[in-house]
Length: 323
Ligand code: AMP
Ligand code: MN
Ligand code: MN
Image (cartoon, rainbow, N blue to C red):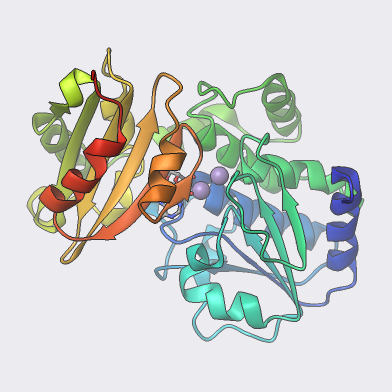
């Protein structure tokens, strides 16, 4: 098996020999998905490459990331084509590429860059590093292999990826390397306070009303070792919150003391999307995989057909309990 440096070289070589490159991350994009997509787009363009940023779902980036440089260029993958290289980011499985799945698999060369431990290695080249805190951090490490110096736009986007996937530099994936890379990004022009304000302090009144509703439904289960809450489609209409404004909702629940895991269930008409977070070393990634999803040991998710009640019935027996 080639070493990691060899795979970085293979990725750089695939990029250097491509003439039209699509860059795309997972459905329902988070900060790492949007930050990696735009960061790589800017990096490739600074190397003189033709790069197109695509969305795996929806037609516009989440409001939280709309102010990132180049966000206005993100376009739906439906109808896009003519690429000779597709770079899939932060997506452990082709299914996570949503609307872009077919395009990714049909493009002559598919490169996968990801930090999920359950990555299926579905590309021609797979740059996968579960020790990386964010896919954006891996793109930062790719820059020297491409021979280009990241500018302020690259730095702002990749800092956003790193800041969000580490929980503002607080989760267990916040290694010394994360701080070194973050410092390099700031030196290269990422504005910490601007990015922090854009991402974490630009919520709509509707989003705060949804936080209040979520907190009012906080429930303990499994002899107090699990806390969960839920929202459904009506809540968006009733509060004015946008569906994309739920990314940090689970962080409001995870602050609670004394639990091993927290869950947030988001119901749509016939399915429920579940976000899981572990607090004390329990592996929620394993639970998510068992129920058809995936993710990391400390942060994972899955989507399942059914109602809040039926999905809770399936989920809770897999989470810690006193017995
Ligand atoms: P989220 O709770 O949506 O923030 O997701 C937390 C982690 O779980 C991320 O690393 C996601 O990539 C992963 N994840 C969430 N939903 C799914 C899913 N349906 N399938 C696979 N992985 C998922
Ligand atoms: Mn992600
Ligand atoms: Mn990520």
